[in-house]
Amino acid sequence: MNEQNEKICLNCNRTESQIPLLTLSFKGDANYICPQCLPVLIHKTHTLADKLPGMEIVPTAAQ
Ligand SMILES: [Zn+2]
Image 1 (cartoon, rainbow, N blue to C red):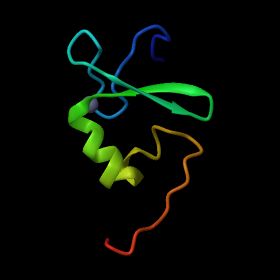
Image 2 (cartoon, rainbow, N blue to C red):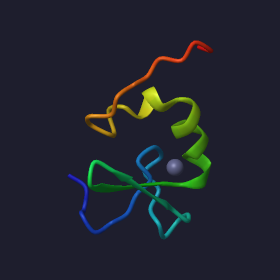
Image 3 (cartoon, rainbow, N blue to C red):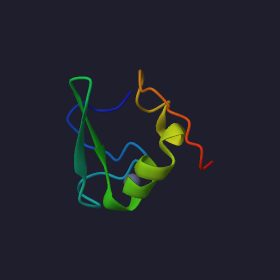
C-alpha cells in the first residue's frame, strides 16, 4: 500500500522529492502526476484507467 502522505506520480511513481508533481483532483481524491507524464494523461488516458478507479474512458476516433 502507498503511504498516504507521500505524493507520487500515478504513472511513473516518482515522488515529489524527485520531481515536481502536479495535483489532480478526481472524484474528491487528490492524485499527483509529474510534468513528464502529463502527456500520457492527456493522450493515453486509458493507460491510467487502472490508476484512477472510476474514470470513464472515452474512445477517441483518432486512435
Ligand atoms: Zn510521472
